[in-house]
Length: 499
Image 1 (cartoon, one colour):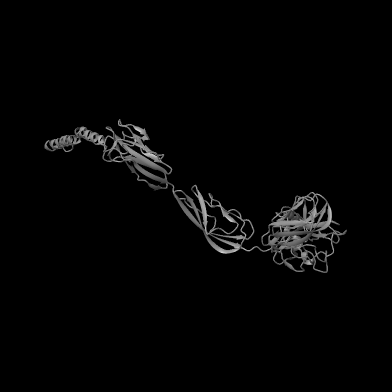
Image 2: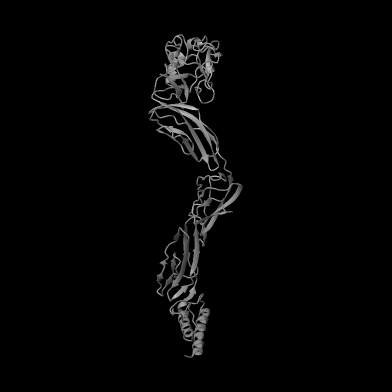
């Protein structure tokens, strides 16, 4: 083939077309006039091995010439916090179709033109997740553009890695409660700088911190990083590890308890200083009772009677232990005494809607929030119609054990005369802060005798009338009568005994 002659002839033909356009006043060179000349020129070049097509001669001889504009994307590729609707267009080529892919493969088309791989573009493409968008433009005559590529990253930031606190204090050799942060994206890795204290670890996908620290340390700052392929975020926390010391001062509300067989006891929870990891009782607690492994609280329902038995309770951790000792009696019948939750002035008849002062007081006992069970209760209160010596409407039973209503701590056991010899009560009437309650008893040296000061038989709230009272935290005679009196317009509690 005479390539020189072909070039000369083709260039002359192109010159004729261009001059024709100029002299005839045409504003543009018509494609249908130029196209035959261009196709002849391309064929001639290909014949001598001068390829005008991408990859020509490499197993792809029909790949079209890149002669039209590559597609563009709007909005442009980039990072977005939410899904995007992407418009694909080619700005300067009319009559072209657009083929696109969202799976990373390259779209293609034939000369008709038809998309041979990918999707024919007809409306904006919705991109809700991180996507590589590719597109090309195709036009009849085997014309094709370069491939346009755009990387869209959706929700790349891990929005808000948040721990419940910025500072944590843990104890050496004590397992921590797992600390799980909130994070609003899927995390592929979590890390801590510097490395967490020995014994603690970080979950690789939740960034939760857990474990048992084994070495004490001063407050140390840590940067926690939560990452994914498209980004990361951080949170800063401080961790202090205190040295573990043995628990101390294990204290129960009483040194002696009396429980009723087959009746659930009120849970007895001690106080203790320090961290406790285990509790034990020696000997084993009465049948039906148990001890909590970490609080040392005693609970349950005793099922077998027993005489007074001493128990040693041990509260321990890895560094040492502390102990407390008390006795337990289990018997068929016990009676309870409690201090009311409410206070009243000296007019107990009116407050309790009774026919007289003592009856009104009894009604108040039976309606009080501190009443420990469904039994009937009466107020330990002296009046003309309620006395211990001689007994008249007296409230204590003969030869009976009385315990605190709140925890079954032993208070006293009456004699055959339905009273007891004052010396020291085994426990006070109440284990809480001191309370004063109306009694009307005479002062010390005149035990169990009717006092002179009784708020006029517990029917007066006058500021010039007085009444005797006792103290809830005393174990001496002051528990019944302090020997002093207060005006009846003041408010005091009541002391109530089970019947």
